[in-house]
Image (cartoon, rainbow, N blue to C red; front, side):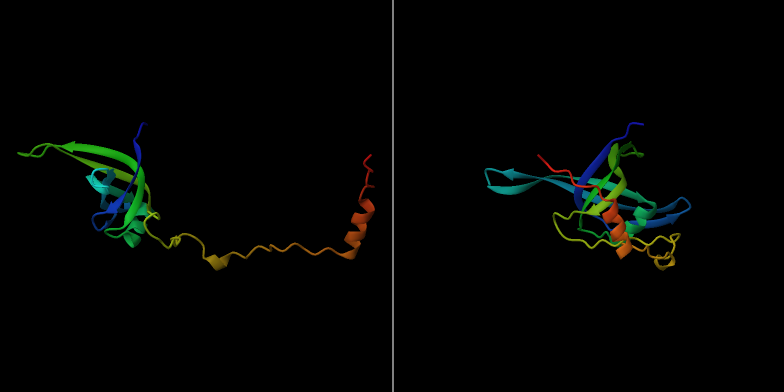
Length: 158
């Protein structure tokens, strides 16, 4: 199936709306993406046109978005672009651009974030598995003797 995959960098424009449904959790928010360019006449950066996208997140991504994404934060969103056009009664046709998000993260070029792995309810507790023994057993004197006896004679280089 042909899909349009996009990666968009912008600012969260609305508070994420989180919902639980029979299909699983979902969250949505509006993302503002403003083009910036260098204006030579003014010798300054100037804002261009702003595009707005509705970002949709599902399942665990939706839970994580609801927990840590806030209005005004810079984010990077990757997902499938879907453009819809509708005509309502007595109104002009309008279009909306939605992104069905695959991944969402904070833009670390504009700030810092503290990553915390989400706990999974079906995952076993961290202490239930024994820690593997990473130590290398020490060599004994008898092993050293056996290695010396088995080592081949060095060949002189001429």
